[in-house]
Amino acid sequence: MKLKEQINNKLSMGLLPTPIDLMSRLSEYYGSNIFFKRDDQTGSSLSGNKIRKLDYLLYEAEKKGADSIITCGALQSNHSRATAIAARRRGFEPHLILKGEMPSIFDGNLLLDKLLDSKIHILSPEEETTYDQKMEEVAEQLRKEGKKPYIIPLGGSNELGYMGYYRAGVEIQEQEKEMGIVYDYIFCAVGSGGTLGGLYLAKLANDWDRRIIGVNVVDTAEKFQEEIKEVLDQLIEFYELEVSISQEEIEFQDGFVGPGYGIASPEVIDLIKMVAQKEGIFLDPVYTGKAFWAMDHLLKSGKIAKGSNVLFMHTGGIYSLFPHKELFSD
Ligand SMILES: Cc1ncc(COP(=O)(O)O)c(C=O)c1O
Image 1 (cartoon, rainbow, N blue to C red):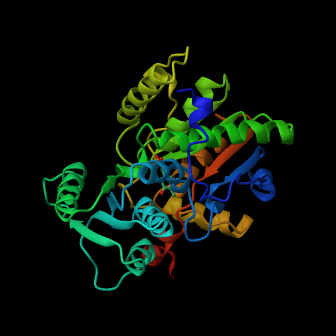
Image 2: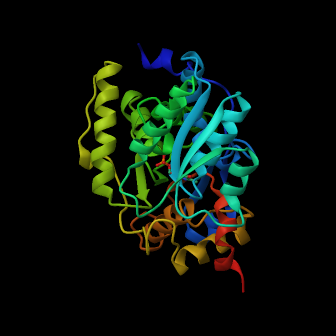
């Protein structure tokens, strides 16, 4: 199959294309032209980057005749919440494997998961079982009950999920032409790799020569470079693309995980407040806040030349602000 055909094998749940907005006050502050790709606007409850991947993944689930969807993530996973909403919208039963301790009062993404009556299977952080093993266990149980489960891996970042951000890359290329702008840098947060990996697929397949920089919010850049290269190699072979990529060519800005996954440093909190107060846009403490922190560092240290055109992928995450409310309370 050709990439050009595969791009259309999808649902259309996301409100696409999302706009690219110039942030005029941030641009003045940094002395560069700061643009936001508004993927926080792909929908209201079903907002953020995951919907682009789910358009492809649930299309396949429907074609396979599935009746239930299984996925996984941290207790406050944006991906799990988006999958549960999309599943209900398409008439599937959502099953979520969530890592953490179940609180007595629900908040943020978890509150929405519960409102959707998602079937929640808790994976205790002490358990040795992996997400994949637990998803397979739940799938086996559902099959025994006569159901047809469809498994979506962590963050929806498999070969099919990559299509979502391949398509976003094509969309940005079209917007560059319409706006008469070339983005010197494109930044995005990396949690499972599908957003960055999909953009790199667009870069490779469409000869789109841009510096696309991932900011890992967990683990190391090296781990993601290895994983993303592996998926890209499979896609290059499958779609018979005459291109290649080395691990080092997948650009990262490492060192901005802070105290750990899901834990924001004071710099991130201050930047979330600054962006809200200058532009009326909310970043989150787990993903976009940390990606913005890395970008802020490169802009302020002069590693990005003044006057550059910089595109920040705002990939959503607003609901994870609420369970972190103590960080923002006086
Ligand atoms: C708000 C937000 N931004 C960015 C990411 C990272 O995307 P990816 O998992 O494709 O690396 C995620 C999910 O992991 C997310 O929820």
